[in-house]
Structure formats: C-alpha cells, structure tokens
Amino acid sequence: MRQLIDCAVLNLNAHANWMPGVLQEAAAAMNRITIHGLDWEQQAVHTEPPANLMPDSPVHLPTNALAQQGVALRRYDVCVVPVSHATLAWSRLTLASIPRGPFTPLMGVFYKLKSAAMQDLMDLGMADFVRLPICPEEFRARLLTLAARMPKPISFREPDPNFGFICHPSRPQSAGQRLLAGYAGVTKIIKGHQSRHESFRNAKSLVVDEFERIYITRALTKHRGNIAMAARFSNKHRRAFWALMRKHEIDASDYRPHSAEE
Image (tube, rainbow, N blue to C red):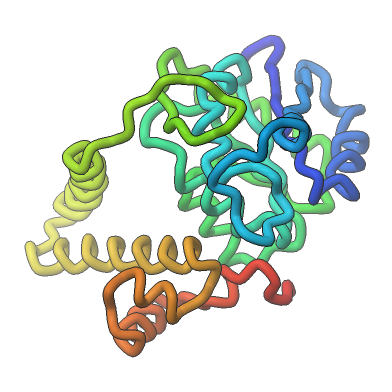
C-alpha cells in the first residue's frame, strides 16, 4: 500500500453547508492522505459561462466537467465527489459522460440519497462511496483501499471539447467506436453466463434486459424524469416506455431534481 496518497475533493457551492464540515470531522483520521480542493465551479463563475449547463441547475459546471478534467485528475490517486439531492441529476450526467477506459477512481460522499439513486451512481462509474454521517476511520480506510486497489492510470482517453476554460484537443468517439465499446460490455455478460451453460435464448434475454435498463435510465436522466420527453427522445410510445419502466422497476421520481427525498 502506498505511503501517501493524494485525494482530490470536488468543491461545489450546493454542498458548502455540509461538505466542509465532513472534511473537518475526518481531518484527524487523514494521516497518509493529502486533501486537495478542486474549485472548478469558482473558476467557471468568474470566466465566460461554459456551454452545456443544465437549466435551473445549482451547479455552475457543464455536465461533462469530470470528463473534460480527466488529464488534470491524473495527478491524484482518488477523487471524492460529494452528491446530494440538489446535485443528483448533474452527477448522473457527468458520470455518464466519462469515456470508457482508465480514469482516476471516484469516491462518492452521499447525502440523503435513496438507495436507487446510490445504485445508479455506482452503475455509472463510482468506484466506492460513504454515506453521511461518516465514520472518519472508515472514510480513511476506504480511500486508502481504493487507491491501492486501483493504481494510478498511466494513460487517458482524450476528453471531449466543450468546456469553456479547458483547452485540451480531443476526438469524439465515432459510431463504430461506440459500437465496439457496447460490444465489449455485451461480450462480458455473455462470457459470464456461458460459464454457467446458459442457452442462447437466455443469454440474449439477459443482454437485452441490461440494454433496456441502461437506455431507459439514461433517457430519464437526460430529461430529468420527464417521461413524455424521454419517450419522445427514445422514439417510443409513452405506454411502451411506461411498460419498460415497470418491467425494470424504474421510478421516474428518482430522476427529478426537485422530488422529495426519504
């Protein structure tokens, strides 16, 4: 295990009333861990407003902010991303925009999130998480374990160019590259079930189910839980979209920024 790790923390204005207290409480247990605050939002506020901002979002960063800062995150062993109900929709979209491939591991700090929302964030790329109120020793142990389990990446896929104050050249993925990435995921599912001697029909059903679940959740994320807009975007009849939601037990309220939390 490394003697010292560098841990970045994404500072967002929407979390200013609780995240500094979390870090202060955990500070006593943070031996061997150096905390670095990432004030990208403050930088964006004082420059030309970046593109791709979510309407009515409390976060003044585009939804591809983490993907755009992929190269900058290389110097850190772990990046802590706090998520609350206010920033849940933005967090989903920014995780979904991260390209496949090596990336600095992300540790979530979840504040009053439903279990479905937490699972969704993990599916979208969070490597681990803690919930408030945190145990400082557990937080430290998870950070150290995550850094040891996922060594610092040596190469990154170039980020997409849409962030106002970032000037890294990039090439967007072609349709063929996206197809290959999807095929890799399908191949992983098939291999896992072939080891249990699944029939072609059963393996195909599992792959289709996984595709449906991911497609529906991302459509709802993009349209902030608006079922009619998500169905129109998907070119599906609203009743058919509803049927898929019921099939996969997906609740649209989990994707609405202003829905009530438990």
